[in-house]
View: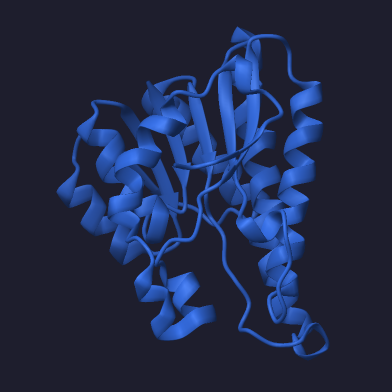
Length: 223
């Protein structure tokens, strides 16, 4: 299976890299941290890693062109790249922070779909997985921008699912509560009581790879 993964340099994305490659999949990853990308290239020379800022449409276009050249049409796209705001009441979140969050979490997902989906449409096959959150189906104080972005992902995914031809699928995936840096930002020491990204990925990776046309439009949760 050929997989394209955004946000591959840290957290859930980084953990998925190991599991996908261990399973023998062809992988393309992108991220903004060029030092982390260099380490990935050294550790996994069989994969393809590119620097890209998903919030920038031109950067995404260049990434997708390079990925298509490297591997051909993807079977699976995973829109994982996301950030969370510094915990604060909504009215205290500044406009620059809010705009950056929505540019990455919402626009970034749309940018990838805009440029990666057309080659898949020519073959009428493939799956797009957009990472949502428990906070894309519920709410919590002091993370209103993040909640808003993940609720947007749920709606975007369901609308996209209605636009896809038979044989394809768009899925919104709630990964569950994982001890990532993002969770630590919100919960501090309490975040360490949850599963690590690495342990999560051992079951999440095969679960994601099992998605097919039957799952189109679903809002699913990782085991």
